[in-house]
Length: 231
Image (cartoon, rainbow, N blue to C red; front, top):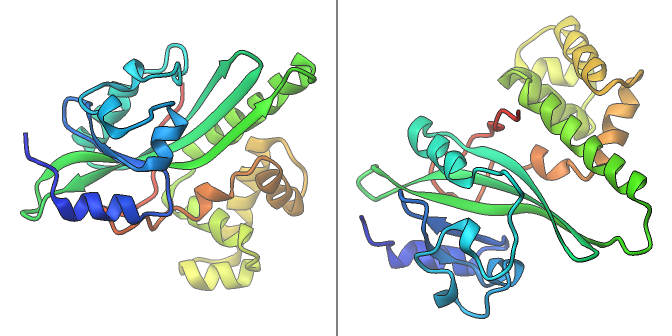
């Protein structure tokens, strides 16, 4: 197992994200102080050498296979995104992660870099279960929709939500306006919405913008968006 270079540790410490690195056996090698607070650790030593399902607090989703996610990153050398939902008493937690391949100076894949795209923490003691469950289902539905998009369709969605008009998107992606319209129609159908404006409204209402602005991530490894296929 390769030691984690000090340069990478410095980059993690100076990052604006809650992030860290795991080795090929899915154990934590290093993490940002923000991530330590998310998982309830008071110092780095509390998580070093441990697995995600063995952290100080129960910050794992039931039935979620974290090692399998890491395996996809290592085996296929591509990023994955996953949504983790869990509870601590009346506190509902929802954390969205991206995991990416991280290479050594000799361009050898050695580690898995992860960072938190979004962290939602809500006290549900005064909320009804139906509303809470509906919000969670909405996010899962959007994630499944995004996971089925082609690379070009995802780029179209990204540009559309950034305020670009179909003609501008067609020019930027070297496609026709009709192709843009078909892609937007497919997205609307998947989300069960009727007009283009609702695409942006739905993405904003469910705080999905982090997915659309995550192609660059602190210059770690291969910077490319690909979404993990959800069951």
